[in-house]
Image (cartoon, rainbow, N blue to C red; front, side, top):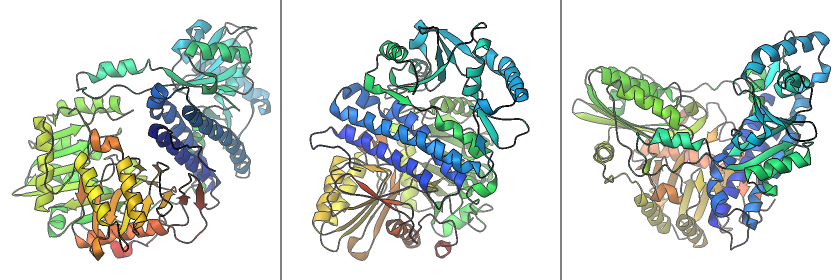
Length: 633
């Protein structure tokens, strides 16, 4: 399938359409014959969550700058096509689940006793939490909530399903059999509409969630978050048989165009299938990954790191090492100071708790907590209070968002650091593939300390061996141009590669005879046929960012927390670090070669915008077995 690009289209549209195509590849995982059934169901929920994020955040700039253009319509057409395909996928998966005695049944199959029970459940548990709005309050509908429109002839009310209740309810005594809460609501509208029995029709609205975060500091952020709740509607979903004149009145009230309204076979919010995954038997899921832990690291990480660098590839090699490093630093009496960057912290975070423990033990502790991490702002505000009340210095927010991932520790006269490609998030670190470097290299530790000192002083970081900001782009361009010859070789692995200068340099290097392998979720379409571009989508989310250059046979490898996008170079503080230790470098190159060769989880991205799935082979870069034994420390 080709993307309908023309050469004059805006880069912004190409970027977001490419991201939508990535989400289609996520949806394609529901067809993987080698995946356990419930893992395929999980990918349907991931796809649904991603599409909500698209209309809430990613589409913000196209919505404001390109709305109404043919280019913008292409985004909507791709998204609508995916929504229709997802509805068909949902029904197909239900058919497969039937053979495993897992069912989502229509309310028409419930017995009289079951109907009586659910009637009482609706009255006792649902009705008290359900909002009923007048039709003229349609402009106030909440983003992503599930509503039902009702009325006699004309639209009279909107009934909002409470967010605190699951969308799928297991039928008592019928293990593995569920009924949709929304369908139950349709049976007993009298409980919500003052005794009236009226037909209900499903709808959802997505609002823009972006806020102007640049320049905000901690005291400004709470007010900014309050205003975000009033974001403009960008998307309306209604069920297939939704009354046309009601849909039109809602569309006009929300200020949407006709193409921004999707008619979809219910259920509208397919995130609900997560309930099935959460309660599914283990044989229908992936076997739990047995991670390898560095021997002795948890007891004495500093001695191990002092001997030589430790490079790990998560989740195959345990993220526990990062948490052990932070915990050991907090409890070691020889450690006098700690610094860390935190972006997406999550609810339960060992690193964050270790920083608090270290501060209470009298150590000098400071953290750059990026309060402006999209959708995690409120949670980070909570962590900010916890840090401040525990004596941890929370550094002021610079004008640029800080996306770097670094921990710095002073122990006696030595300094130690951890540098990573992923967030310090206890849960995600076990689901995403990321590289972790532990080092006591004097050049790297000195630069990390400079990075934190500059942030605390409100100055741009200036470093010698590490790169941040536009210096990363300059480094990449120099190294790419250095490989622009026959015999040159580049392996470029990032989530997103959309920087025009970087893409042009890669194209030039490939045309000059260099072997260029690009591993990415999304990119722009202007790629030369000579570039070998592919996207990996499998059990684990590919999240590591690495650039490797043959350099005449003496490979240079760099890693970091950034994507090759203009915003990461021009509007963020990232950290891009060299992998200096030879054994660590060999390990990273081995992983990259495995991914380049992968024919189990891959899609080839062709220069005309089409893609070809590479499944069913024998080169699986994500296989959770002992194929990494030779990389152990």
